[in-house]
Image (tube, rainbow, N blue to C red; front, side, top):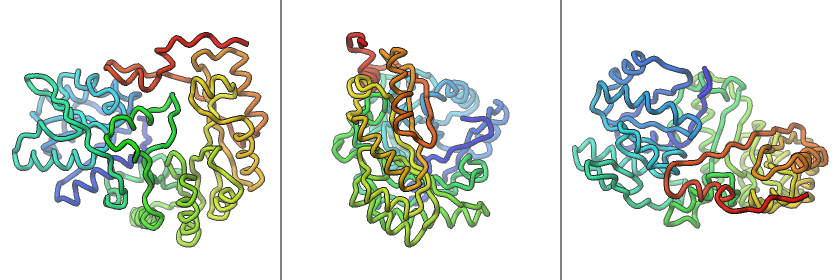
Length: 390
């Protein structure tokens, strides 16, 4: 949460769409600034919900305890938590006395089943993908398979959010996600740990069909127009808009014909070639975001699990420079075993590839108080790696 600024959540909008499609009422209290106990409880009382859900990441987990305590002091309403932190650290979240349930992973159909059972006053302890707290302990239901065909989902409920309060709207941008998952296993990212949860983990990376994705964008733009919000740019939040290549080519050609707004996107350096770069430019791409992370090969390959040689990274940035597409390089500093010399390697690589802009985030590990997450997400913190020598 940033004071006064809000971010669109594709997951919440998708869950809301599925619930509304099945005749459930949904409302959102988007906490974009601190709120008093009195104001918070007044909003709950006004809505009179049968179920309250919280979605949050690790960086905002510390805020949860106050809100759930306030709720349980006045109301007898079940509370469920979802999102990355509850998915990867469910027991830590359930250690909070007032939390009743956690949803693991994709929430559309677990939430639909839960709402159906609450509406019918049926027992909801045995719903796949939910961990449910009972007087006898926690019931850990199996995780249901991933939704393999994203086209079967209704389009997100864009009306759930007040777009006037979103940070993207303030810069005339609509943020969009038309895929889920990631192919890769970078050690610092939650994706490879999340993938392991699902029985059909080989289907973790999925895209809407190009035609469905274009329809999604049209509906979002129509919604923004109805709300009198001027959208001049599209910001794709997908992990990698350049995979698979055949899909990207078809999608970008359709985008060129039917949308053609300037857009930015995330890409991987090793999935870009001259053909795709040219099509990105033609379709309206004005900026690409690419992870470099570390200029030190030992750290990049062995610690971060990013098997990407310097020349591959440089080639991608050269392609974008020649195409006159702005580039942003993501870097990390303060990595495990990073020496001053290794940090200097990152500076040198950025000087070599010459991105339009470079960002350097400070590495911050999250250690979860449960059995599996820490070793899955950050194996480098638990293995006796020898010091890197220079």
